[in-house]
Image: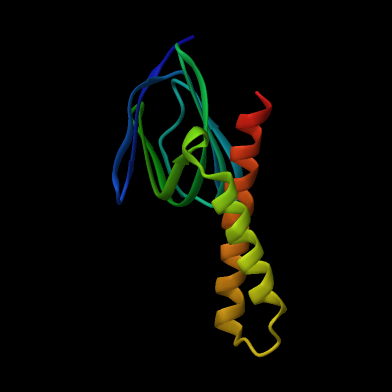
Length: 137
């Protein structure tokens, strides 16, 4: 399979730099797959699973927010949060889910607080899902 240069950089620093044969990420309009020869594009990232396929194999991560660009064959993924599946603390993700669910039950929250709690819940569920899939492999 043909490869392409991929860089994944977060506010915390570089997460990956090398050749990939496939990248799958969740954008704001759904999942998007990138392979060598993909057209130039720029899109915002949603919350979901990212899959990076290289000659060495496949790795999954929780990828939340940010931007993806494909320009002249080079792919740059600049997520707000990016955690490789094997680095996610499942117990911490479960605790975050429970805290968010408890917040969402509070009828006194403002609309902004509700949106923030909902985003925390979605983030925790993505992290749990990615970490759990690592356990089943």
